Amino acid sequence: MISVLIADDHAILRGGLKEILVRGIEGAVCGEAKDAQQVLAQVQSQNWDLVILDVSMPGRSGLDLLRDLRVARPKLPVLILSMHPEDQYGRRMLSAGASGYLEKENAPEELIKAIRKVLAGGRYVSPALAEKLAFDLNQDHGQALHETLSDREFEVLRMIASGKKVTEIAEQLHLSVTTVSTYRSRILEKMKMATTAELIRYALRNQLVD
Image (tube, rainbow, N blue to C red; front, side, top):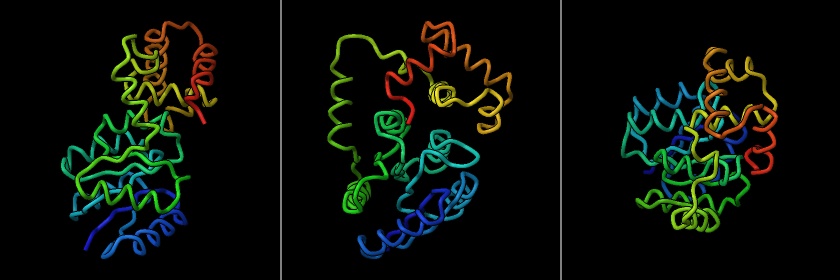
């Protein structure tokens, strides 16, 4: 028996994933979680062979949740399944301890392939992301400006660039308005920019928002 916890806030998607797994992985038994609180509760109360985690979870971001999972269950494989393009979050998630990153638009067969590789102790990345990671490792010049940001700063940058106000960001991330404003100031300083408009232009130019 292979136990898989499916963590996504959309019930229809969880149901679809469950059907794919039961058909594609012999002996698969699936549990479900709709938010970060449920994920942590189930991981702490039950042993799982794999967690399939969305990046955008209610209450906390997938990045924050992944870090908590690494502390709670260091050896538990976590496969990220997200609507966000891998060039936006792939490297950060892998660096944070994910066992793989897969976009939701992939075919079910690719998901099964990724799951099998992760369950076997490997790491799953698409050929395109693997090539990008290799290129980034070998290049001589410095990092892109947004790569100097912390995970939280990067998240705030994406939300700013998507048009969200400071109050909206604070509410979604469960932070104070002052804290979000501080993050914004740090982002501007690290990226050597003076205005929010510059941040937005940069994010759009580098395809950091959907």
